[in-house]
Length: 323
Image: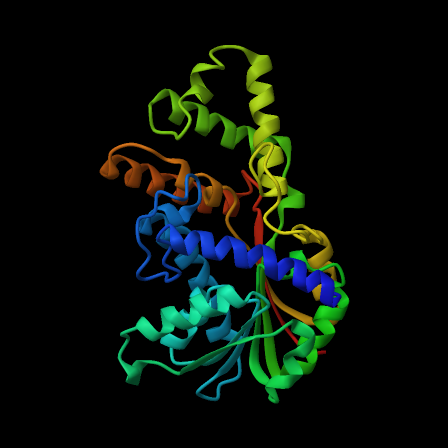
């Protein structure tokens, strides 16, 4: 990306993180707080954070544990770390971590969260953050056992260029671990399952917008319209009539990213991620015991349906080695 493109992204994420922090957002997977600012995001409730984000971290960590070099402590670069919640968990797992991001506000939030962390020092590795673009990571002056991309590559137009930089940051026996959206694989059939669940939840008084179910009734045309709205929401990762989160969001699709990863790295393992819960759980409303039970059921169905091929994932995780 050009300097101007990185600047546009940084400004968008600076605004977003500052607004979230002012509303009570805590970027810590273990200490997330209830935050009604998030009307549909899983960050609305720590229970949902555990079902989506903490489960996602564990999947990344499993790949690191399985395929990274055997030496300890492992070093890891979290490229595009945002406010640092994955970097923090890897640090808590005993790794030596460097997190970088273009957003000054995100790096400041990550540093503040780290300063408040009370994990026993003998359980942790090391962790530091720097505000850097990917192209300037040579300034760090070292190579890493693991380079992690989590939700950054779909903001970048030149995927091949980004992966060339990553190759230069890895130790010869190091690994790249990448988690990215795969929304371009979704179909109307996938959206139909989500639309039905939302409509039923709305009729039961458990969805943020009760009108979703009542406005449809038995009208197939309205149901078809809801399916189309859900499809657009998930594929473009935004609510209807809302803007995208940053100027270069969705610059590259999942299929394009995966193909580039396979051009530059020797594939070790690819895992399907979740499908729909990231835009479903935070929309639940009602008594906590009931909504948490529904969330558990939906998360279990998401895992099973993806595994059995009943619904397509909207995320994937890739692990690869240098050629």
